[in-house]
Length: 327
View 1 (cartoon, rainbow, N blue to C red):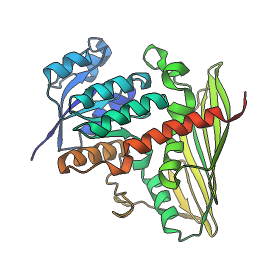
View 2: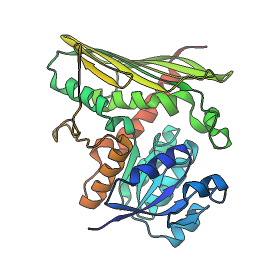
View 3: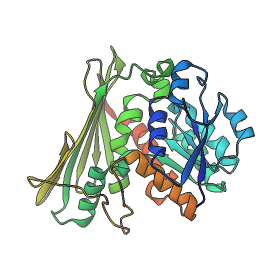
């Protein structure tokens, strides 16, 4: 069995999560890791016992290695140039969300990806999470009537732990809208398409707190997405409430409820016609496995196309441009 050789770029919190997800995927082999802090003791401990080639410079790694795929899990403001550099070399690229921070950079990436002899996918992990996949299929099937409204909430403490504090710098992270709330905004547009109108209430980061409350108006439904970072020590939470003509579905505290009954999700959710078939319990592993399968089979990653990921960047930017008021 051919194994896809993978090079990981970025070994922070999310990069560590990706590396752990690799362990359950037999079709791939991690061969190299690149991180500017590669010689620091904290990273050495993470890689202890692993037989890998280590680099602190992407150009050097690409010059010495021949990976089939590069997994880019660096700070968001670094994504565009790294993605383009790898695609131009004909290397398949999985890039952590968001694709980038601006519409202009997204268009640059799309232009290169369109002509590259390699596959490109943005890791929008919520599209691979079982409760959200279940909701998407219920909307498609329409068995409990027409969708009326969805409320998404995604809350956490402000990320004080990032390298060089890049996440609290809105110029480098895009702020709470582009880093956190984009999960739900992207999911909404991937299922429902682009909204007719948008607006939001926005508090830029100050005193270590920031939030965005977005409204997406569709022909027959409204979607709200609340994303927030607070200075208080708040545990991370993500939930949704969806209301239909003849029922409701909500997901809270890890429990999925439909019309008052708890839904036990099986190891596979959805069908081929909807493009969702999620195995196992780890959504990060599911998205990586999906992209690996696309490389091996020659299929395009239709579940998360570059164009769709770019639309999410444009949508967040449009929301910020249509702010009703700032706090």
